[in-house]
Image (cartoon, rainbow, N blue to C red; front, side, top):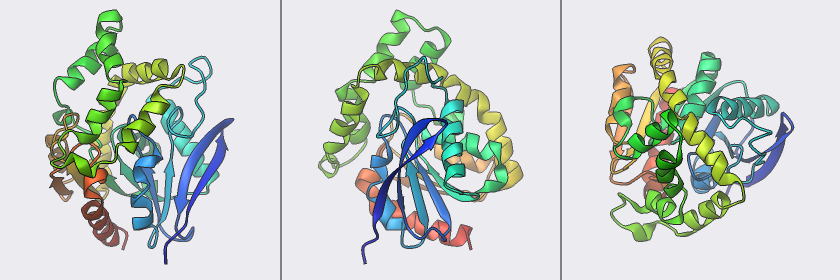
Length: 289
């Protein structure tokens, strides 16, 4: 029997937060946190692959996907603020404990949720969701950090280039041995949302705030050591944004971390949905037993 996926909206601090939801509400919760520049759309195939066993919730971050996009005057657009909205959504939905899947921007949001209340997080799946400086690929992050430290026309130019259709497409196909496996609907969908009036300035604000995520890493590592939270890293090994060393680094603080490097790129679900889903199902079956 095919499980229904519901498309819902909740109001959190006066903002509409869109989320996809499937599975038995009495089952263990798995929260899926998407990255840049996409939305919960990236989980459209993974949700039904997990929902027979888990209560799956996949929100769109503010200014991404179908969630609200308030102006810079009306919302601070920091990773702290995005995490607070996600925490508010989970509270609104009555979610007390959850496993989480983090990818790209979803990782610093997820780390903040864990630091707010470590006992709530039952397990972590990281799919190219970074927590270590070893994971940063050059030259991409050199440009991000230069812009964060010294915003101006010269440092902003590479960041604006990251908001173009070619850059969005590259994130999906780079490192994928057979790019014909990746639907162009992905980058067309994402780019249409990036191109909304005012969204460029919002994304630039988040680029400038990214350094706060790096500053948070020592606390995240301490959380790993203290909690011994079960962690699975399923990583596109050919990612030009977060390199495999970022996956392997989890074992510095979580020696029992399970790590799988896949022959794929940044959005590995597009080419490796089945193996990733199976790794997650096997891992959560053991971690949540």
